[in-house]
Length: 178
Image (cartoon, rainbow, N blue to C red; front, side):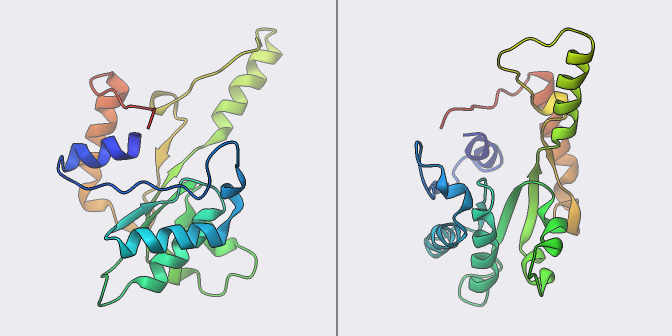
């Protein structure tokens, strides 16, 4: 929902394709690399320029689809990774021979730096204030960030940071239900 809202904030008329490798209660899509590639190929062939690979290891299939299908017919295709700065971390994957092949297509990643969340829980426990229940974290807490590796977003970084400030200030409400 947030991805769609962000895309439409830039271009209200944009056509956003949405697809899932699997749906709950089946969570195997998070580890389905072949399914990620198959789904991304379908989206790119249907006209997508960018695919947000928001599902763990299946994102590796999205990177492969972007690299494999880029060319004269579909142009340069992009993928957005998740969890870590995947532009950087793909080079450390077991068996990775040519990380640059994928890096050329990783526009950015939505990074989830879990260290601050874990620190908060441990600190609350140490102070005797740890309570059960749901903990919510977002942009204002540093729980989500964009990766800037590769420099592909440098030209639009000021606009993206302005949008981030609007969200943190509460001027922009980001939907969270698709």
